[in-house]
Length: 160
Image (cartoon, rainbow, N blue to C red; front, top):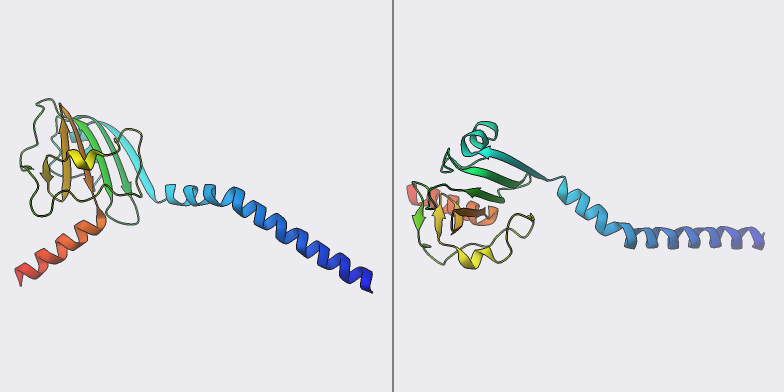
């Protein structure tokens, strides 16, 4: 009887070790896969095409913008946007300078090869609830979902 108990115990221990090794080896990839399934990324030839095909595209994006890249979280309001602006200036309705405490952070949950690291330190203005950095004719815009929700709460309180 001791032999069977020993074999069962050894089998359980071996299975536990195998699960532990698999968790360490595969766990981070599963997390990346899971996070990636809560993001949508798209490219558009123009601002007008982007706005026609995606409701969440900001209205301030000029129709004549080109090379539009967009990444959004489906679990919140985090957004990244890049576009080429032929005029090389902020779109109509955007404001140069940063009101209040400065730029809100670029959402850590979103990463894209086309969106540069450290761009928040180069913020030049705001467009709606997005912070923006304009470098030549390249517009980089980001929206932090937590900052957006805080701003919307403040706006609701101010109306009452």
